[in-house]
Length: 226
View 1: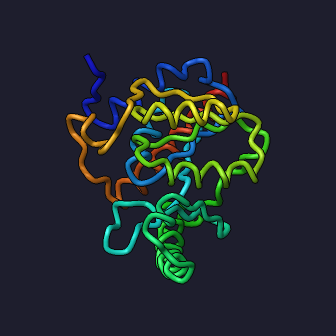
View 2: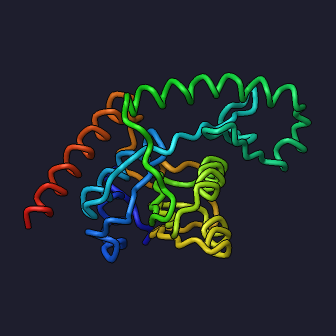
């Protein structure tokens, strides 16, 4: 019988249980892909007593068929393109630039909205747990990995509740630790594997990041006293 998740919180709890060896470690940082990945990441952060931050990456959708990813965009001007989709659809560089410019504005808006004045965490030399609520095409998480590689974490763990098996195998072959309880031959919609899968709002992302920040401060203060 296939594993199903009640909601993103349940998925985060299940992943946290599999990541228990990384709890209470000062080098661990949880990076979640918004918006849905932040709810999953919050539970992991909460259980591991690790700080939580967002890894903001925007999917570049094919014009007129936005659910199909031609690639993804990450901070620092990094693009990861799906060459198969570009070739199959005959998409020009001009179209790519146009889509990327639009998504760049949204990426910058989300960075301001989610983080406020808080700077991004430095990942160099840390153990990073990269979290999403599932991997379908993999374009978004590949862009996130490309960014993280430049920032030189000591160890990268990809933690997702559900993904295509071949994608998990690909990441494992690249030397990353993959934690994914439900690996499928095909995956058309991540939400099909959740009983409750609502859209996550910008406000929820902001509130979860604030809550995680307060929890981390409280835990650190208590740990220092102990």
